[in-house]
Image (cartoon, rainbow, N blue to C red):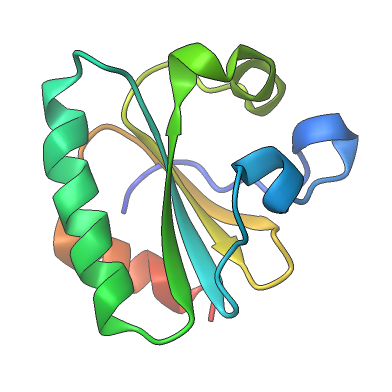
Length: 115
């Protein structure tokens, strides 16, 4: 998964994302957080890829967030396009970030940085 790493920015300036920001409980080991929009074609393929990877690894959650309905979070995280994928470690820290549709192998490799 190509893209820039980012660890310090998060909602509320805490640098971590939890259930309050994500809208559901994060994964025990890691989370694949996808920011999508309604008419985004690559978002659909990204959803499938992330769901497949999350199903392969115990303790990993795939969480999809509607960017249009969560503008404060989008702004706080500097999300500029959809899909954008964040890989969070077990503490909710962003360990990888990429915009655009990722390749499955890149998601698996990025997940290795989080678990």
